[in-house]
Image (tube, rainbow, N blue to C red; front, side, top):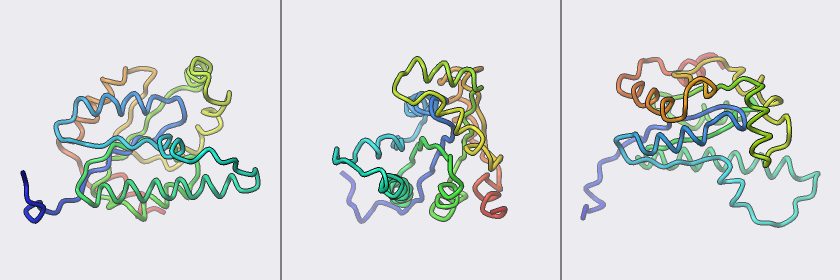
Length: 189
């Protein structure tokens, strides 16, 4: 058993999957956990929403509660990575402040920003099949989610299955170029 004093400090890697609802982020994340060589944690934003108590939130307070949830999620991810853990994040950057918040928290050299794309027709089909999302949610998110336009690696889940996307990401990790997408976005915003 390791002594805690002998654990070397390390900054964990954040593999940040960004795409609309129903784009395939969760499926890719699940496959990443099985193909990556190092232990890592999967932190989906939906899990943080699911942790909230069942107390009714008045409509006038909903935006505030959601904003605080997302900010807390970002800080939990940053904390896990700062403690040396590699993290796979599943998120929807459907508001510019979310990207800015992440850019301010995560060391940009240690983030791999992955664009998860899917055409609107396929998103609508998946939403209908799932039945747990409001119809048209993904279509409404589409423009803003990818508005920043810069990624380290991109996947189209209508063209490649989740495992193939995960393997592509793993292959990218072997020789990550600089500047990273987060470094370029920090510079631009």
